Image 1 (spheres, rainbow, N blue to C red):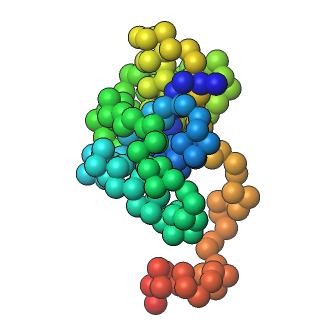
Image 2 (image 1 turned 90 degrees about the horizontal axis):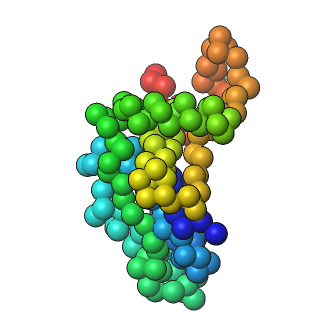
Amino acid sequence: MPKRLYVATGTMGTAVGIALGLALARVDVEVQAVRVSDVSIMNQAAMERLLGNTVLMMRRLDPTLPADLAQRASIRVRDDFFGPGYAKGTEATDEAIAFGHDELGLDLEVTYTGKAMAALLADWRDRGNRNALYWHTYNSAPLGVPADRPLDANALPPEFLRYFGD
């Protein structure tokens, strides 16, 4: 069982969901929520609010869930790999992307996955913590829509048409 799970964290949904799921399963794994969005969006206070609000919502659907589930969740916000800004990498990010490609056969990118892998590699080197899990959030599956195909707004549900003007 890994001791740490590394995941890129923008709006915190994935990290919170994983941390609450692990807490519910009583699995002792600390989620390393590697911040990839501005601190005004993703920060410790926002993370705690989302944890608490998610548990409240879950308990409305199932009151048998533990009331202290948010406190049981083991999650650590990692600010140290954000770099100069959103979608802007660092040397550590570039090294992590190369490592992912060369050693693991993973396609990583500078916005999310490269930063999460950079955190894992830094801890691996500095602390010798080799009992870790990387959560890959990059979807590289092709959409199956040719790039030169024009958008057919009439094929969209009516609720979406307001986003495309008159």
